Length: 248
Figure 1 (cartoon, rainbow, N blue to C red):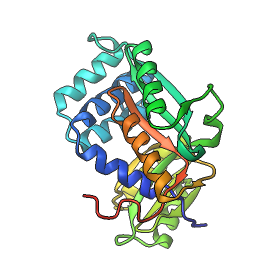
Figure 2: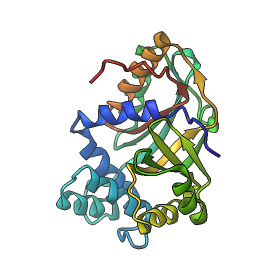
Figure 3: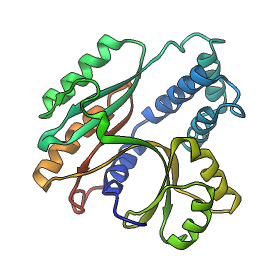
């Protein structure tokens, strides 16, 4: 059942980048606004909002900013007029890339995203030409030094998990979007602490790249991720394990 997802190094790098920038507050607030806008402001009835609030609390977004973001999403406060857009493109080496954004100015954002692709050796693509290479999944990550694969399988499979992936230092549990909250809750009820739990676009296949191309791909990834309107960036690059050796 287990296999190497080739995603851990990308996500680890992304986590380190996010930890260095104050922008994660803005991202967390936008996630809440979009969730409340789509499904209402009551987290008990809106699983997506409940997850967005969990993630906001994990990055210590203040309570008043969480509450204001919910109100913006429901229209009680101004500032909730955001459009959620998925941009598609290719990076160096033919790596497929998706960029999820939330913006109040589509023209500005698409120009900035297109510039980032062009500057770093990539190009934007038509809608649907890249997204079919990815599947939206619930993704729950556990450190290996806390739990065994058998322990995760015992709880996860009974709750509806699809797969458990060996990612080197961690195990990644994949779920269908509809089963995500139930699986997450099952782990919580079992007292099993995870490192992260979120929805991701998971590649169906990965493109191996060498260190030279990998660095170019990551330069593009970082440029896209640093965009003020970007919520998430995904790609199907199989990066060399030692690409980030020596980095903080």
